[in-house]
Length: 508
Image (cartoon, rainbow, N blue to C red):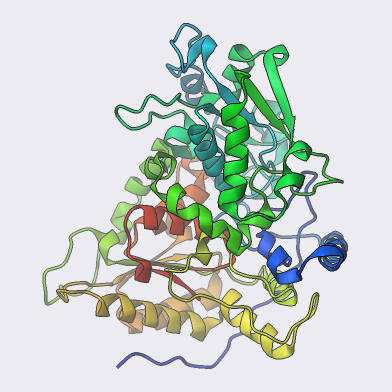
C-alpha cells in the first residue's frame, strides 16, 4: 500500500525579511510572488494592481529587515561556519581566466578582433546565485543563437550570503566578487562548444574592454526594446532579442539597463518572465541547447563533491536484489529550509503566486494550481493554509513526502531493482528538531542520512558551498524541492537535461 499522510503539524518560528539591495531586484526571490500579467488581467486594472503590489512590497521589505528570503542560494544559512579568517585569493583562477585561448586579437573570425560580441550589463547583481544563474544561462543561449560571443562576468554576491565579513573582502572590494569559473564550467564560463561547432567562445568582461573598446560599441538600452515586447510569451521575447542582436551590423554590442525607477526589473529575461507560465515555451529549445547540455560544475565544486563522497556510502543491510554501487543512484535529496521564510510564504499566498521557472514544466508531478477564492493582495484562510502546506512543509509533511516520493519512484522501476536508502538533507535546521527528523526517517529505512552541515569544505569550496549542495542534489536518484525556489528550479533544469525521469523530480 502507498503510505498515507499524517496530519500533525509542528510549527516553526518565522523570521523577518531582508531589506532590498540597491540593485533592481531581491535575493533569489521569484517574481511569481507578485501577480503575473495573466493573473492580474490587462490594461489599467493590471497596472494599478502591479503598482499597488510593488508599493506594498517595498513598504513590507523596508519594515522587515533581517534574514534571507525564500528561496536562498542553498540549504544552509547565509554564512556557514568557517575556519578561515579570510576568503581564498583565487588569484590563480583569475589568471587562468585571463589566459583563455580565445583572448587573442589575432584569432580568425568569428573570434579575435573581427569577432562579434555581446555584453549584458543589465544582468542582475547582488542577488542570490540562482537568480544570477538563470540569467547567465539564458543570455549565453541568446548570444549563441545570435552568432555572438557571450561576455561572462564575475558573480557579485549579496553581502548577507557571503561567508566572510566586509572587512576581509578580497582586494578591499566594496562587494564580494567570485570568478564565474569557481562556480560553473562550460560555454557560459568560456568553455568549448561541441566538437565541430564553430560558434565563438565566451570571453571575460576584462577582455571585452580590450577587443571592444567603448568607442566601438553599440549601446542598446533595455528601454528601447522591452516596452515593445511587453508581456509576450517567453519564446517571443527570446526571438525578438535574437533578431536585434543577429541583424545588428555592429561588431560589439552592450545591453544596458533602464533606470530602476522606470523598470525595476530591467533584465533581458526578467523576474516577471521567470515567475510565470510564459517561461515554459523556452524549455524545448533551451533544454537541448549546448548551453544547457555542456553546463557543469567547476573543478572546485567537483573536488568538494568527491571529498565528501564517502559520507554517502550506504551503511544499511545489503539489498536482496542487485543494485547500483553508486550511492547517488540510491539517494533521495530533499531541500528542507526551516523557519526563516514563513513571511515570504505568506506573501506568496497573498498574491496567489505560481511556482517558479522550470518548476512550472507540465511534465513534472506535484503541479500547484493557485486555488480560487482569493483577490489581488489578499487570500482566504483556507487558501493560505494550502500555500503553507506546499511552501513551508512541517515535520510530518516532510516525512510523508519522503515516503511518497520513494514509493512512487520504486514503483516505476521496470525490473524492480531500484533501492533508495541514502538520504541527503539540504537544510539549515539544527538541534532537537533535526535530530527528531533524522530519527523518524531512520525508522523508515533510511540507513545513511547526511545533512549539508556534515560536509567538510576547504577554503575555496566554502566560497562556493551553494553550488556543492546543488551538484549533489543534481546527481541524486530523487530530488524533492520547493516549487517557489530558484535553487530548486536550477537543480530541476540540470536533472532533466541529464535525462532524469520526471517522477524523480518532486515538490512538496
